[in-house]
Length: 268
Image 1: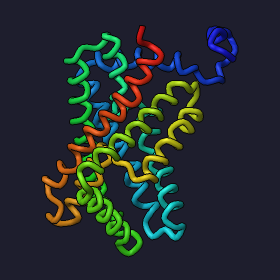
Image 2: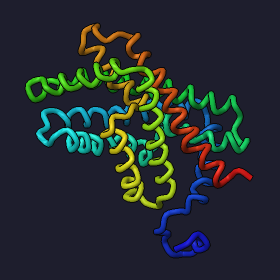
Image 3: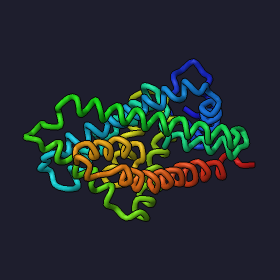
Image 4: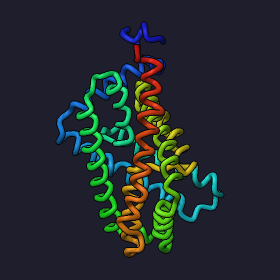
């Protein structure tokens, strides 16, 4: 079924065309940039928690895996997809996904002030949600599962993220959010929940399996490591990771996806 028949009484099954997706993403960006601050903030907290749920499941799944390096990473990536599925289907405001607002900004429908305000509020909300998830996870005692191996893996993940070269962190951030925003982009093309879930799983599994860096996920992984390492991982280490990864995420989502598609499908 093509776009000309979208208004018929029959259910729409075919995905929207890329040109139509661009228009919808533009409209969504305008809505997001102009919604009430308190709503944006609360939905930002929810997204931080949702991404942390994916991170929790990822940590558990890769613990003591006997599948080999590649398959373990792949299964972990599929598990981590839970986070974005919750964000998209249940509804929340994720900083990395909101980099797509740049499309509406480039089209002069969103001001500099509004886009920066949205990103700031959502980023802070995401961070608070992730920290809440860390505190909750520590309170469950579940990190002691499998003879404490889950905690060991969680700590190893945190150490690896704070001991990576800054330029590598930046590039991994770029590639990560290109895939995240493409996942969100394809979700807009879908008309039902199952299709949205399938649109999410492959790009997110890819970025996780490949070892790219997601700033909001790191807001859970690294603070958890800070608690578990008993001070060996510091606040400096957290920002050492988050600053280059966040900048990379912005470039990956805003430039590599939003601006590219704006140039192709919207710019007159």
